[in-house]
Image 1: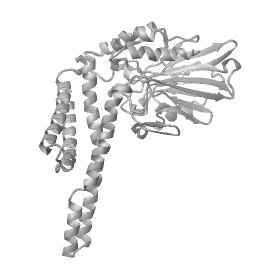
Image 2 (image 1 turned 45 degrees about the horizontal axis):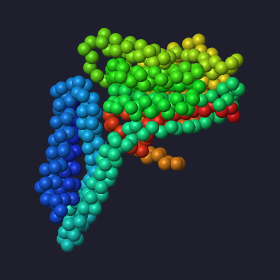
Image 3 (image 1 turned 45 degrees about the vertical axis):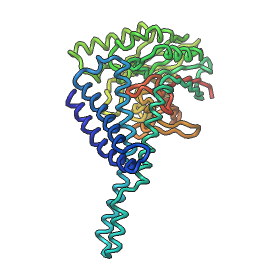
Image 4 (image 1 turned 60 degrees about the vertical axis):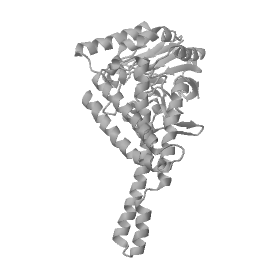
Length: 417
């Protein structure tokens, strides 16, 4: 653990050293504040990040008070993330200077011209440097703001899905989807109550939870049992596991302890009144009509995320209905396996991405860094008659806030086409 922390510190130091060149250029002629004071403040902030990481490697950070570890690591993340924007501009400037220098060496022989080129090419462009610092300041301050205004600013997303073969009894059937609660990240209980109230105000026919109730340990969910046991619907609450529910991201004292933790989490789902689906299937009955439901454990195409789920097990003895829903935590499952091998899955519900908790969403346009990792990362997608909906997550992980991509309660209404 300490070795890993030291590696992170080394990476941070290299980035900080590079960004410091921009700070020196930007404030070298400052008259409002002495440059030396600016430099001192910069390195004090950088050193604070190093100390936090090293402390987390020496003393198990899971034992720190939740609010302390949450906001300290958020400070490290925000600082590093903002500096990456500055690095991009510095790299562009350095590449321009390099190409100019090469052009001078190869093509120019006139002494006067060479001196002019050297003057232009060698000195760093103040414009690019200052622009980089300004651009870097935008995510820094917006993410600070997002910790206080975005973490619990719940958004209710309502969509209608038209289904040609939908049984008459299910016309207008209302689904509420929640995902990625991450109880281990919450530092306040009161606003979480509001998310359940918002969900129940929709009067859903059924509720689906698509994974990641906890960050690492089942005990993280215990303080919030009284909150989430209020979720109920006429056709029940169904849930699945996400990648964080298995306890794969912390060190356990023994393999038996890890197994026991997972068994406790299964019992927590049961105590909440949720039907946990572990590669299983069911029928949702309404009068004489029914729709099919499948739920699988985590299945991902990304190597760093576990692949526990099995559609083969989930579809055993399953007879597809005229409309079938799949609960699968990771949206990469849809394109990798579901579209081609399981064409009877009309709607897959997923989460996992959180929309990176950072991005831009305006009518007709959405962007987030996570789109460079996942093709489908937020909202509704369709190919042929098959649909995928990716919930943006109710909670948060790592960064204790939201910027542009708000925590989500999804309301899906099935409508007969």
